Length: 309
Image (cartoon, rainbow, N blue to C red; front, side, top):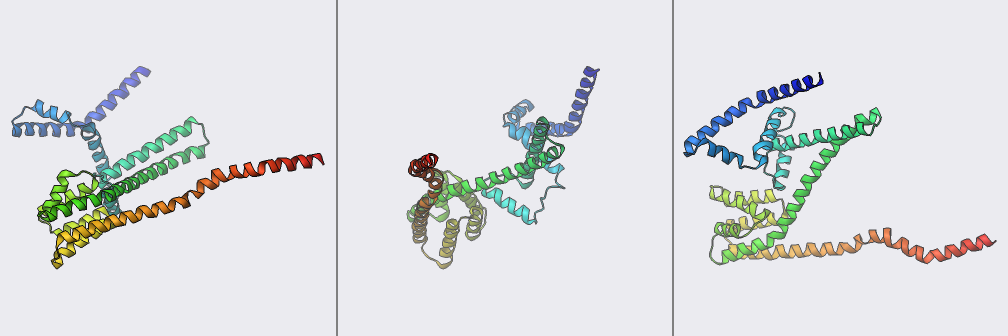
């Protein structure tokens, strides 16, 4: 009887999977046939190219998109929403290229997974009913906190990398402009010879300028995407130089020197804070040992004297 029920359950799951993915499979087959007819390749070659893609693109990303579409009524994804705009900005600053719907779907999956894990742990530890009820809530809160912390941590790390890379990139742009290149050509030279998150942002800016967006608008968007005061200052200086007809090479040289001085001041400020931060481990770990070494013999002597009385 148990074997029959297991087999029936397996057949049911199989039928449900076929019903769920049958339409999607037909659409994919039709797409592969059209691609094969356009490219002149056989359908086997197109399928082989599809199978060479990473597992994330072949399986997980379509599943996340389906989840995002299914829960689109419950996940805030309105374009005019302040939360949606703030989340989009944070994803952009963290260097995450996925959409808001995909990120919300991943976050929902992680929250459900943590809730199930905490519920299972509660049953395994044989906790009280109230604790078993609170365990999934704790798991959901933990998952949300971890996702939020991971996003802010990625933003901080990426911003630090951009701040570290900014003086070198500005020096290269300044040298290229002084050598006779235009501002756009200088940015293209930097893009071809540097790598990093700041170079990625300059790549977006260069593409926007080549596609017809004005230099002013492209630089303003660059400052908003990076959200770094030095980058905003650089963008504002270049815009002002173009508006007032000032020599761009002098502006770039001045901005490079000012940013290096600003970075030097920040390093000195951090160095001056070290002495204050060292007080905490000294008070916790060093001072008690010193007190024990100094006062220990005296305390022992006092105890012996009082015991002799």
